[in-house]
Image 1 (cartoon, rainbow, N blue to C red):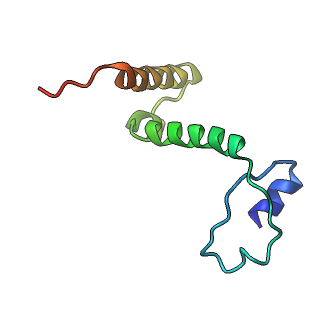
Image 2 (tube, rainbow, N blue to C red):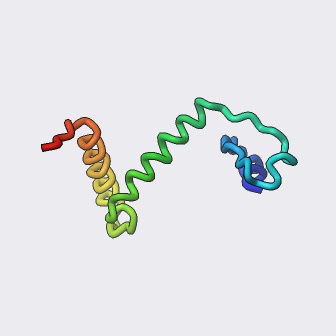
Image 3 (cartoon, rainbow, N blue to C red):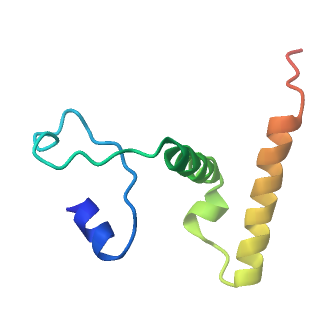
Length: 89
């Protein structure tokens, strides 16, 4: 039903089928675009990282400017965590 709703809105659903699902064999076998799926995983991973920031998750900020500033701060923290050498002392 999700794939049909996406198709009705002109959205290409690039979601891998669950093998455990009872109806995975009855549906048409839509191909999975690996490059598009790779880009989707980048966004999903970013959303998971952002969930670690309570201010962004709950949305305490009411003005758009402050909300965007908090996101830029979170992006900066995530970048610094990635490029900073890990110290194990």
